[in-house]
Length: 230
Image 1 (cartoon, one colour):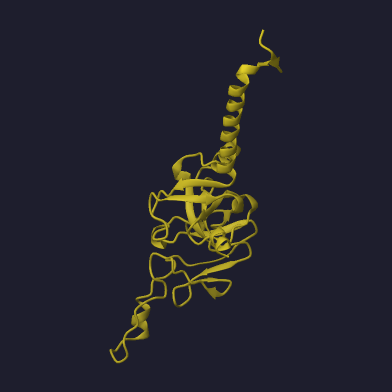
Image 2: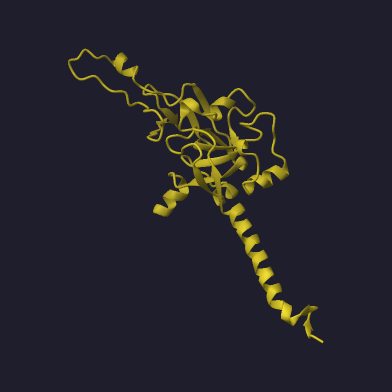
């Protein structure tokens, strides 16, 4: 008779242990994917030229889980209850979004322009956004903001002519204050982006809940990248 330990035959224990290790590894991989890093495919051109259509991006989860999202970060948002009208995230859907599970068209990639306490306004005479009264430099935009070509001296150019060459940071005027636990989000391709501006007339006035953030995009100038660079 084969000796057993806790009911498992000794000669079968190596396979049992191997199976347990494989299961544990899969569980650990799932936790890492859900709680540390996820990958997404960008479905639209709203973040061009920074991020292209169908580009794969990695998303750092801890900043979203702790609410440590900063101005300038690029974030993935679960748009149910905000950008996706008529849908609110259930608990099951929220958990699914943590693990990147859900319809592709409910996830949005946007840049954080304002965080709690910020006043964001469009626009000054140079076409730039103002954040807490200071012009926001946005070299990542699809168009040049405040970068109109000035006329050479003596060619009859006027200030009005130069102003016509200026691309504004937004074709929608707004003046908002970001409340606690909310974000003001905009795409880098301002002329082709569904973002906070589209929600100005809805309850919440365009503000997105921090809790709707899935994570911060790695590799495009977000806070996690700046931290790693020192």
